[in-house]
Image 1 (spheres, rainbow, N blue to C red):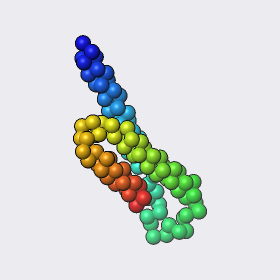
Image 2 (image 1 turned 135 degrees about the horizontal axis):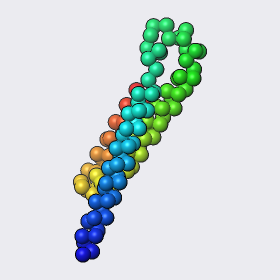
Image 3 (image 1 turned 30 degrees about the horizontal axis):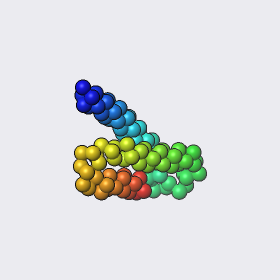
Image 4 (image 1 turned 60 degrees about the vertical axis):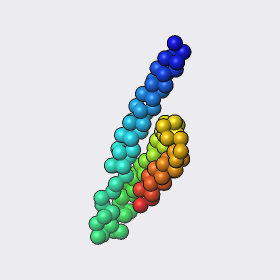
Length: 106
């Protein structure tokens, strides 16, 4: 009886983790869309830079928010990865985190 209750409790925790991770991924996608500023990809962007100050600050904010979300996803999913793959779980999570940080810095 106790083993069955523990299994159901673990399943409930995994459902919450999956839901939270999904919502964070959606938030990261939204932040990724909002952090682009197509106006600075034109040839005369330096002339328009002062007009775009607010938009550039917002893009920087969304870029930072996306980086924080990626790190949060890594922290949330680490116990699941560790439980499923005890050997090498740290390197898998570190590679994911480093990859997402590299994407944010480019």
